[in-house]
Length: 188
Ligand SMILES: C[S@@+](CC[C@H](N)C(=O)[O-])C[C@H]1O[C@@H](n2cnc3c(N)ncnc32)[C@H](O)[C@@H]1O
Image (cartoon, rainbow, N blue to C red; front, side):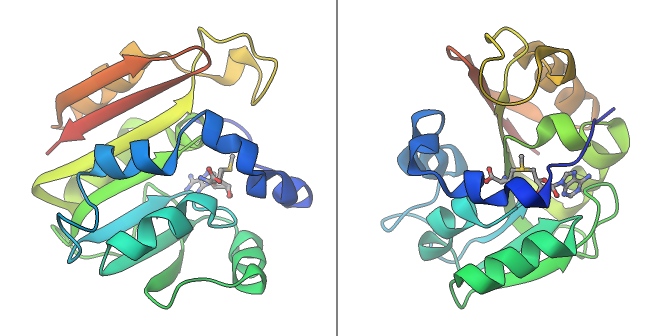
C-alpha cells in the first residue's frame, strides 16, 4: 500500500535538473519505446505527474499525454509553469482512472510507485493500457541509501514491482536495479 503524498509546498524540488541523474529523458523514452523515429502517435499517461517534470520530457514524442495526479494543486503548479499543448490534465487516483479501457499505448510513473502501489491501482493500469502496451515504473529502491527521496521504510524493491505487475497481468520486459532507484518495464 502506498504512503504519504508528496507535499505541494516542496514542489519546486521536482523541477531540479539534477533529477535526471536518477532517470534521464532518454532512458524514459527508450523504456516507453517511443521517440522521434518510433511511435509519435502514442497515447501515454504519466501517473503522479506532479509539476510535469517528466511529462514535459515525454510529450514531444507522443500524440497525447494524460498528466494524472491526485492533487489538483500539483496541476495548478504545472499549469503555472506552462505545459505542452498535447498534455491533458486528469485529477484522479491511480486506482480509479477516468480513462476508457485499452486507451493507452503506455503508462509510466517516476518516483511515485511507492505512493500508489497496491493491487487495485495495478489492475486499473492493466485496464487502461491496451494489449501489448507498456507500463514503466521508475522509483526509489528500498536497497538505496535513503539519503535522497523517501525514507527506505516507505520504498519498495524491484522484486515487489515485478511480482505486483505480474499479478495484474503484465509480463516483465526488463527489470534493473541501480544505485538508488529501480526501473521496471512491463508489457500487458
Ligand atoms: C514524488 S512526486 C513525483 C512527481 C513526478 N512523477 C516527478 O517525478 O516529477 C509524486 C506525485 O504523485 C502524486 N500521487 C501520489 N499518490 C497518487 C495516487 N494514488 N494517484 C495519483 N497521483 C498520486 C502526488 O500528488 C505527487 O504529485
